[in-house]
Length: 605
Ligand SMILES: [Zn+2]
Image (cartoon, rainbow, N blue to C red; front, side, top):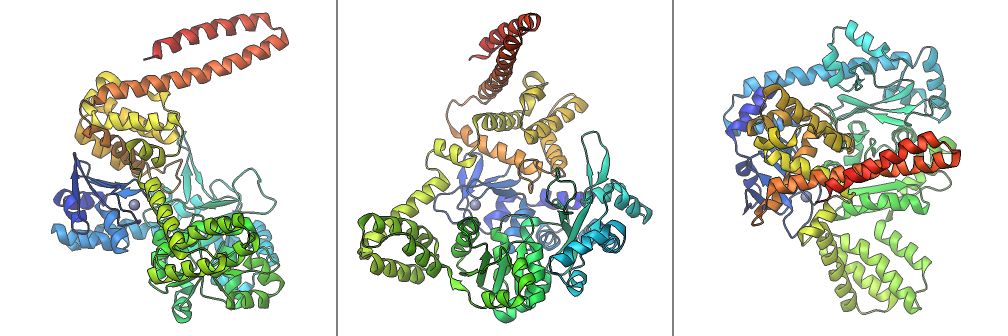
């Protein structure tokens, strides 16, 4: 395991020293806090835990260890961050290189071999239909080859059998994301009956796939499936097509953002080659910063119906906040660039050649919507335009659009500036949460049960010594899949050793790092666990806070929630039995009802 080197580095460096080298850290109880470097904020919501050697931001929900921090802040790949930190820690570089290259290049080899396999499959039997589909969408042979498109046959083991025959180990095939392991431990091919799009790093190394179900295939499975996060595939940092388009992006000093893989390919085919797409995720700040290495000008192309612009809003606003020049293009009669190119490439070329500045677009569409002479119209216009104006990070540009708005609706600029500042204050208050209560609400806009489960796990982690006495056999009260899996891992460790110690939690976290989060999709369970602990740690600063008592309260509340759900179900069954005049069943159900009501009483605190 390369982890030994990682652990060695971790043991020699303190998280607070590494992060403190970049940020001003302030003490906050057992932790440190700072303003987050990864999103804009005035009140600190970035926490660092020396005890767990980890960090978490409640504003942008990012977190991890020293490696993820250095990767993010320096814009490095894992191997580069490893070198940097190994240097700092005085751990010999040779060793680091050797060990990690080993595992990483093994996974890359598996992905590479899978790509070849899929490409071959496109030429035979079932693949022919996939090939026809691609041609039907208007893609040329040249592009199908350039982007190395392929086909995954509808089989549970064809790919893994092939890879195993080539000498790859089952564990590594799983690690590369090419197979899936179900609850019963059965391993099978992840991609079945799908059109395959290899996803490459900037350096043109294939690290994963995105896939589309065959039209007319099994409609019950997801239309798009992607490789999960692996040691080599970091979704939030990869842009589809960038390996091929980066030189053109630099040349044209402009990056075109489209929605899907096929859009990228079709655009290339039409000669518009400064183009990228996110691969199955929403656009991230990391991706924007990668684009910024090549250009500061970004052009979004989205469906031009209202919903399309809305979907783009988040990305557009993030780009504005990153200080980029944002434009959009309107694609005339055509749902997306791919359709457009299929019908008439010239239309796409022309559309791509005439982008509109995003603020001009907003002004135009808002002005068309409301009457600027009417007082209500003025109010609406101001409301809608001040939001994007508030996102502009450049002061001169912001002031320019404020003046423009003031002129258009005949309202003094001073007044608009006042509203703008209020809006900014509200935004940051909502984001950072001034009071703890607000923060808790903002942090996870999810129901009470979720929060209780998260808190309970957090409290368990803060009191490992009490596990034996208080927290065993609690599996049934976790309904959230992620939390349940984390709890099971803790329970397993406790069972094996007979006790649970603080040191064991590090070991558990390491095991959780290999497991995908069911809910967030692109995070692992170690991150979810760490977030839970950080979120309860803030309570510890309060005087007289009794951690164990609080944990028991969470557990009781959760039991009650579950019992009430059961009760509801029984009550529905009773109604059903009444309708059917099933007296025997009715009697049984009524007994059960009485029993549950009694049980619920015992959970009341
Ligand atoms: Zn943040």
